Each structure stands twice: as C-alpha cells, then as structure tokens.
Image (cartoon, rainbow, N blue to C red; front, side, top):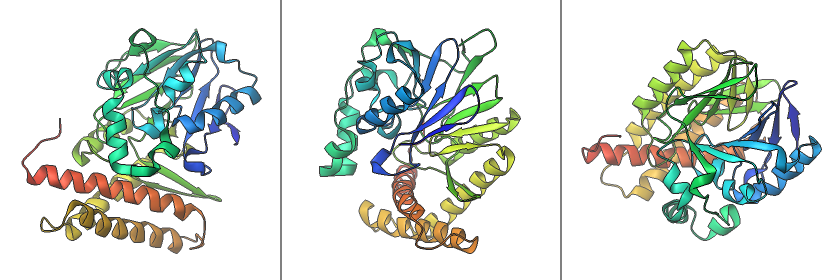
Length: 318
C-alpha cells in the first residue's frame, strides 16, 4: 500500500485492487469537510484504512464519501467502509442510489462476469441505508470549505450513473472512468478508454470528454490511476484510442459468433494493439503493467461487444 501526496490538500491511497499496485486508488481531499473519492471493493478497505491512518485521519472525521459510479471496483466497498465512518454521507448519481441501497442486481451482474472469483474479488457488498446517501444532480455544488467547492457533472459514456467531480481549488476533475485509464511506466504515460459493460456508449463518452475539454482543466484525477496535468494531450489520446478501439472491434465482430467468442477475439485485438504501441514507445514487453492491460482490454472488449449486440437489436443507449 502506497500513499502519494499530490499537493498540500489531496493525497492518493493505492487500494491494491485485485492485489495489483496502481490499479485503483482513493483520493483524500483534506478540507474542512474531509472528503474521500472512491473506496474500491471491500477487500481494498483494509488498505484504505491503513492509508488514512498514515495520513493521521480518523474515520470519525470523514464527512463525505463520493462514488463516481457504482461499478464494484469503485464503489463495492462503500457500504462496508461506511459502517466505520459514523459521520459520513455517501454521494452518488441519482441512477446509482437504488443499487447501493439494494445491491442484489449489482451482485448478480458481477457474479455473471466473474463466476467463482466473485467472493475473493468483491465480498462482502454491504447495503447503504437511504438516509446515509446524498444524490447529486448535474452541475449541483457542494461546499467543503470557504475556499473549496465541488461541482458534480453527469458524464455518461462509461456508465449512465457516472459522476465527474470538479475541484475549484486545483481546477481539476475527478474522472472515475469517464476519460479512461492512465498507465504510467517510468516517465511515460499512456491513456486509453475504459469501455466496460453494460451501458458503454462511444457517442456519450465523446460528449463527456468534450465537456471536459470545454472546462479548460489543469488536472485529471483518474480512477485508474493517478493524476496528470497534461490534460489536453490525455483527452485527445483517449478520443483517438476510442475511435481505434471501435474501428478494430467492428472489423472483428461477427453476429454469427457467440458473445463469448466475440469477446475473446476482440480482447486479443485490443490487447495486442495497446501492447504493441506501448512497446514501440519503449516499454519492456515483460513489464508487469501488461497484467493490467490484459485485464482492462478484456473488460473493454465485453463492453464493446455488448454495445454491438444492443445496436444490432435496435436498442438505443439511455
């Protein structure tokens, strides 16, 4: 477990999601109202608590726990963590609230994807009482101190229940998965989209990214993983890769294949495309970062296949 002090206000605790370093983190905003962005899954909660202890933060001092969206690698541990934070409220998108209070569908969906690995990765998923949640509408604001106000934006594309959170002090955005993933290898940074199931929409993702561009941000705080100040380049790269992901996936998708067969074929294509680009730019092909790339491109392939299936059925993203 590592802690990165981004500045005097904001720290990042590595939550060791899937027992992997720099996979998923929790941002600690040290303002008058102490705020945490993301908890990851329940097995990450001991890492979060250890990080907070090293930062000399008592659980009783936490006022807000913000979830960018309810996918389990971002929010699965929120209910478990909340039990030890007596003064905290959980902030969530309006479309995510009911799934946190009654996580049956979340659990069922994750079990369908992860099968027998589910318990090791996510158990337990604890319901969050309705009176411990705050729903944030688009462009609604939350004052953390005299100098700091957070503004919440609804940013679909990765998921319909996705919030992005603008921090007025750093002129930065906590992005969740809206504008993808940052891989860091030494001094090199790579940015690719995150297109996981089952609400992925490339059209909506582009709208959200372009909204980011219009805000003239100075920082992006990625859910996976870390902060960047090369905002314009990062957003441009994610858009470019999104087009590339969709183009290559369309070439290898076949309605005659099963869902699993399409995922396998497209996952291999996305992995090789990403890896070859990173290797060309100087990353050792045996670098452990490719464990993350394997995981991410497989989940992204699932979302793209799901999108193609919905499109073939004439369904529209909503």
